[in-house]
Amino acid sequence: MAAEKNGQEVKGSIFIKHLTLFFGVFLLCTDVFFLVMGILYDLPLIRYLIYVKLIVNSTNIYLILKKHYLISSLIIYTVIMAMMIVGVISLGTTPAFQLYALGMLSCISYNGYLHRRVLKKELPMAILMVLHVACYSWVYLYARSHEPLYVIPRVAEDILISFNSVASFSIVLLYVCLFHHVAITSEEKLEKMALMDNLTGLYNRHYLLASVEQLEQSGQLEKGKSWLALLDIDDFKQVNDTYGHNCGDHILRRIAEMAQEVCKGCIVCRWGGEEFIILSGGKKMDTKVVEKLCRRIEEETFRYEEKNLRITVTIGVAGYENGQSHDLWISEADEKLYYGKNHGKNQVVM
Image 1 (cartoon, helix red, strand yellow):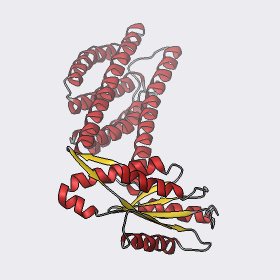
Image 2 (cartoon, helix red, strand yellow):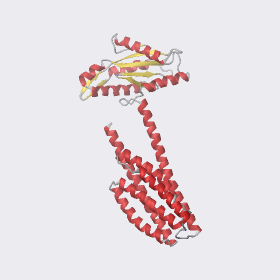
Image 3 (cartoon, one colour):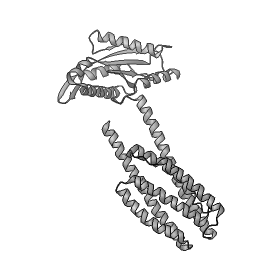
Image 4 (cartoon, helix red, strand yellow):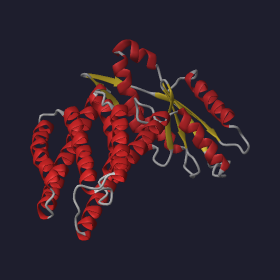
């Protein structure tokens, strides 16, 4: 579990690096575009800002490569906001520079999540968002009460509107997609944790009970066709006491693998402790598959740390009766299991 967690953190750090690097390169590309516009249409203030931005953004790439992601993210936000403010003051609201403030809100939110989740560093999200909203409001009100510093041809306005709109919406769409991916992935992980047994990788009792109920409601459980088997490892406590719990865990995982291999088409779940449940579901499956599993385990040599162990299991099998509750069905299999336990073990009781 620790190795898996460390792997996820490394993967997250790599993702932050690539994402931050992408934005650093994106800003350099926008610098080139706005510098060309500033030269073509004689916009001194924008040109001067771009000269400073080129130095800052080049330095920012270096910081990203040196893994200073927090500082780099703050530089990116500051640079984009500076471009928005200078753009609106220079040309007014028509060229749509103000859209960058709105577009960056989703960027701040997602990057704040990444820094907190992966790097364990707090990004001042609330402060950044308040500043972005304040800057947006200020420049918009300023543009309403002041004439722009420069007047550019309509074709230049159209180019800037198109570029700024595409860039801003791309930022929003990128982070919306990333948030969507995070939400879906997180939900799937939570569902898996709720329904899977971490040790064996099998479904757990919650999944089993839900499956029985679903099969019953859909009419797939039929008398004479559907059955349920409760498997218990013989003398498992003695294995744990003699060889340790790590050995016991190894046995549990190996039997889980064997049950899945032999009982293909069945639902195999860990019921708890050293007990497993095998459910035939709506398919007509011969109960001989359970006999095959019992013999397969008996013949298997379980190897653990240069030790060879012989393991046996006892299995109780109960057929489905129409209208029978799942509690009663499992109890019937349990009774047959304990009958086998008390009469020699290493057997299947039908």
